[in-house]
Amino acid sequence: MSGAALVVSLVLFGAAGAQEAGGRVSIRWHSGFDEAQRKARQTKKPLLVDFWAEWCSWCHRLDQTTYIDPTVVRISEAFVAVKVDTEGSSREKAVADRYRVVSLPTVLFLTPQGRLIRRVDGFQGPGQFPRTLLETQELAQKVMGWEQALDKDKNDVDALVGLGVHLHDLEFFAEAKELLQRARGRDQGRELDERKRVRMMLGIIQHYDRRFEDAESLLREGLDLGPSRDYDPKILYVMGKNYSKWGKLDDARAALETCIRISGGGPLASKAREMIFWLEREEKQRHKRERERP
Image (cartoon, rainbow, N blue to C red; front, side):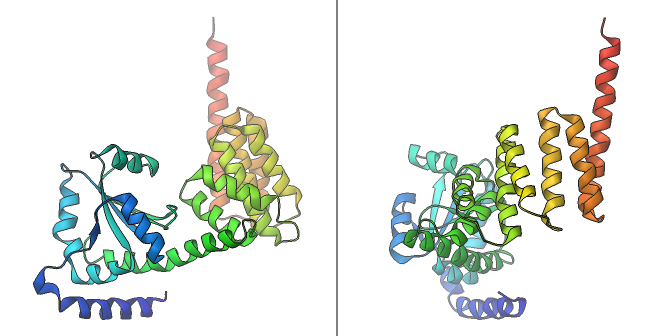
């Protein structure tokens, strides 16, 4: 949504909502997460999930300000809203655990199938939250569109990549890995940079899982697809990080030096130089410890 369109939407929603302000309207909250998800599936609307606890003063402030703002209330009709008490029933605690809610307040936006669309950590007032809602509506259409495409064809590569990259960026790595692996096996003939990005992201996931050899294999596969000015420096930087964590410091330095050489400068080259500095420092400290060993 363009900036101008967003401003117009806010004005229109605000004007309509202001007529209801005297009645102290509030977001329409559903009675439980499962009931809200059923409603979301029926209406094909995304979920707005407010995680709270009795002791959370900022959660109560959301109720007292943001959630009774007429503009927020009006825009929220595009969502199915539900509150989840993180210290409530076992079901509510399980939902909080599933989505890794560790601080309050946290607001999550989910697809009707339960996939994360967007996460908001901390308080947002009535001046900011309407924009968040409108931006999330637009993002929700993309994410839900990928889900619908996969419902029709479970091997739709565009949807596999789109949804996999989205979940990777939100650090929901287990599901992202499954989707990207499926895309990797079906992306022959597709754009080179897209294929490289899929393998790089899978390499990052394996790196975080400390499966360093698998990460190396995926990253090398990405490099071997052919030269790419945009993605080869990124892959080499990730490879340097992987070798560093793996304890292969010489290989890490070689990958990072190649990253610097082909990147043409810029922020990535600076990050690679910084990592080489810390690798050399670590190596010096290791040699010093070995010399001082009795």
